[in-house]
Figure 1 (cartoon, rainbow, N blue to C red):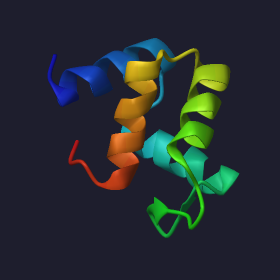
Figure 2 (tube, one colour):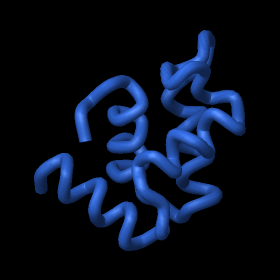
Figure 3 (cartoon, one colour):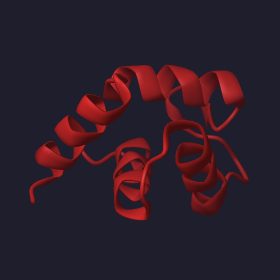
Figure 4 (cartoon, rainbow, N blue to C red):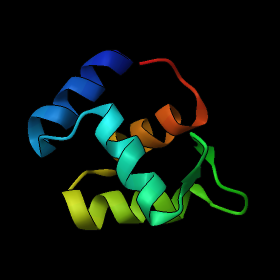
Length: 72
């Protein structure tokens, strides 16, 4: 599965686009200025995505990769 396919599946499951996840992560303090905020670890973000959006580990890690700069 390609990275883009992961993102499309995530959007189909959650109704949230990559831009929506960035905005939500900023509001939670996980991102600052579009970058991962200092001290934020992958586990914090993936736990949030799993709990609030029902994502599995692979899909949550795809969002983490997006936040780290992987192009969508």
